[in-house]
Amino acid sequence: MAGTFVLVIAGVGAAAASSHTDESALEASKYQTISANYTGSDVEAGASVNVARDFDRSILEKQAKEQVAQREAALQTLKDKTEARAQELQRNQWVLPVAGYHLTARFGQASGLWSSGYHTGLDFAGPSGSTIVSVARGVVKSVGYEGAYGNRTVITLEDGTDVWFCHQSRIAVHPGEQVDPGQIIGFTGSTGNVTGPHLHLEIHPGGGSAVDPVPVLLQHAVRP
Image (tube, rainbow, N blue to C red; front, top):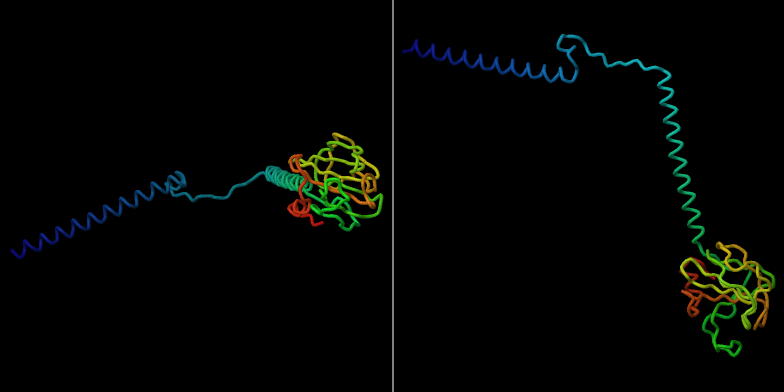
């Protein structure tokens, strides 16, 4: 009985050893197969893998030039977009209509000096002949003498707002002309119903009734 038990144990050990050997051999076989798929059949034959490659110098130079050209093209595109955006911001910018002024009559002030009984704009008093510029981008709607307003220019902005520039000594634009912010449109004067040379500025949203110019100017980052 003891001898039989020893033989059984030996047999089990041999079977376990044999199973372990088979599994190891199988794993090694799988590894070699996977390795061959990545490195090629030379590895199966025991050859070493050569990762070095010889490139034609002319090809390298050509590729380098193409890369530089692509980079320059990308930079130029970015520059063009930046300049276009800057021009767009400049076109949409608002500016003061005159320089070297002091404010006199403001919107809503009541006085017998005005036919309506109250002031409908903002007055920029200053030397006669000072340049008047468009406050924003727009199209000249009309020009001419308008009674109490004297020589008046009306510019319609891109959003439909009409801006009146009144009491000019001389008008420098004509109807239908496109104007940009800061472009000269006329010169201050004393035409019409005035007590001295100044620019009377009115703002009419949508071409309707006049509103206080100060909040509108402030809304567009312009402080009179």
